[in-house]
Amino acid sequence: MNSRLMQIIQGPVVSEKSTNAGEVGQYVFRVLPGADKAEIKAAIEKLFEVRVEHVRTLNQQGKNKRFGRMFGRRNHWKKAYVALAEGESIDMGEGEQV
Image 1 (cartoon, rainbow, N blue to C red):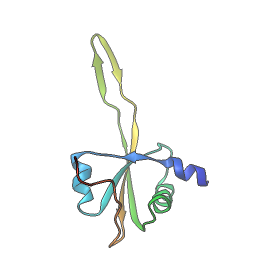
Image 2: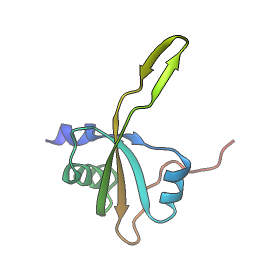
Image 3: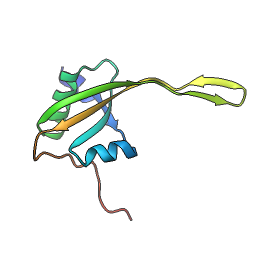
């Protein structure tokens, strides 16, 4: 179970919407498609040593793309919105850019 927790969180989602969610204490992560909310909560609490209040998930559908005459589709993926308890925060490497 411990090694699965380390694989559940695939990385942060960096977008304008996720940046706005970060201002109100929510963080957005890309997670394994088979992960449930309890596993995501346990993984975030273990990795970042914070208290998670609740987790919301959604399945992001892959976009249809065209490459010349060929049509293709990007992969589907799962996104998790994680709300932390009052006073908790995660440092996502937001520092000075040189």
